[in-house]
Length: 177
Image 1 (cartoon, rainbow, N blue to C red):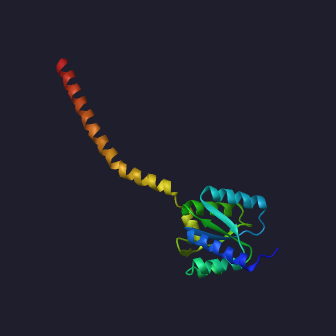
Image 2: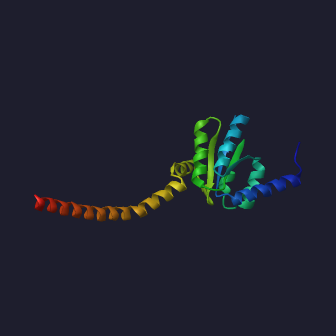
Image 3: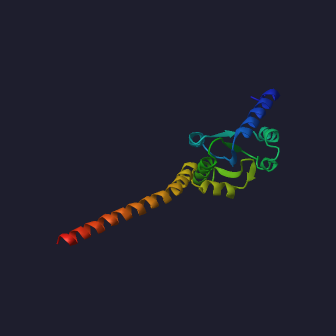
């Protein structure tokens, strides 16, 4: 059943709100995917703070005009059966999930473009972001690099005291014999 004009306008505003709230957006062609594959994709994306929506191209173009006036290149990719992945939390995790899924089913799910933190990006840039370690891993590396000099200093100081004890023990043993 066709939607009324008011319902389409409301849907456009809802999509514009999602565009403006998301840190990243991925536009993908999904032609030929089964309902089970789409459900699997949605579950995987939900687990990393993302959402996949199949939307009408005309409504999506209006939503882009409302929420992202600087993202007019995105509108050129809204042709044919496309879906939009909204990345709300960690951009790297969302990009990894989308790229992983596009590699699992390359003939049915194809990433066409994206937008990360207000900048329109090509598929190669999206893949480069996906190859980065996650935020938690990067934070752990930073903490490790901050703690490493202290650990080395502690090891050096312990080594000096251990060597001193060994020298004193050797002198004591030499004098006792």
